[in-house]
Length: 326
Image 1 (cartoon, rainbow, N blue to C red):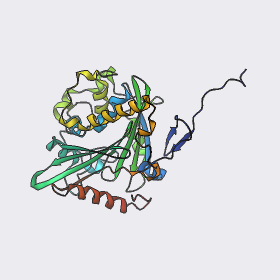
Image 2 (image 1 turned 90 degrees about the vertical axis):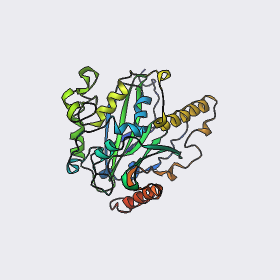
Image 3 (image 1 turned 60 degrees about the vertical axis):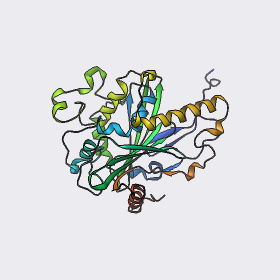
Image 4 (image 1 turned 30 degrees about the horizontal axis):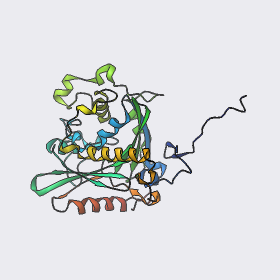
């Protein structure tokens, strides 16, 4: 009997520490030429974590540029020399201003969204004194991934994969332009916050996410430690595993979430009607999709678009260990 029992199998491919399975019809399409796939294994660190909520609300926190100024507000600025492997601990581009201070001092970004082949490009402009503007470029990779800058030299590409309706894993690939990543250090940092083998976070609903009222007075907006992943986890889990979105009041800073949900509804309707050619990335050669650009830079209010493009080209041109050019 055991020779007659069969089950469905899917083609898989490993890319820089993460195994991807193709579950659609026909042959798997080629991978897009995202930086996390183009970079050699020496320049990419992969990790994952379990969140007790629906994948959609887990993903949406990553396409809200305004939340970083509040949810991740640090009341004291860490020495950037100790920032390796930590988001928002670098200095803002071409300045001595810690990113934590910039996000704290300029909490109301002007947010615009552009359609792309892969999903959405999200632009957050924080207009500073002296006619300067901080430009932060993040991305939504349809349907369930984001790409964001971690520092000037490292980006994060992160997928939100459902376990079931009420739980999901995030899978992150940290990609370096400057040099090989210190995988031992980055893994040790994340294992301080997660247990194995299930990659469940040590701070969770059961222990109040480590909330410390004294810390909240002196150090952080949430009082939940210095790991921003815990802040995000609390934000997406606290409304319940599936938030009742009929109770939402979306505002001006939610423009990316609004645009994304329209894309998602349109894709669902296309699948229901059998019009799969209308889905994102259909009719596009994935091998010709590069980037996506994810960076922070500072320029004038009038030339911010030229500045962020030039900054990205400079970063890529200086990448000596792999061909990062677009």
